Image (cartoon, rainbow, N blue to C red; front, side, top):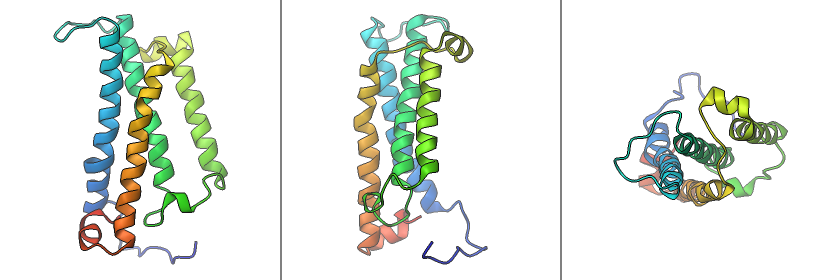
Length: 167
């Protein structure tokens, strides 16, 4: 609120935003999802090359683990993306009630999709152990830390950061 509004000619989608989204944060989220997905499959006895039907319980659990990992990383992304240059840690994370409501709503919806039989049928998912959700946490922390480092270099005036990482 202390900064003036952006220029009406400033684009929302810039090369820097694309690099940050698809080059930095996206791969972390994808890695989290695939790690949880394959952890479920391998723990369930699946072997590489073995075909799974879409109605197979193990496959549906793996899909759920992937989805949950992405949601967990998206919550970290939301928290770290509240500022463009300032550290997310410099702001009180509990002042914006709408963000809190969004996170709680997202977790409630995730729980419904994971545990409610009707939602399982609609989304083709099945409940998974919480250990697979915990497996996604280091990736969420990595996403948060990576973006904090990016913002740190922008604040310190690094030419590389100003050129490629600022959004």
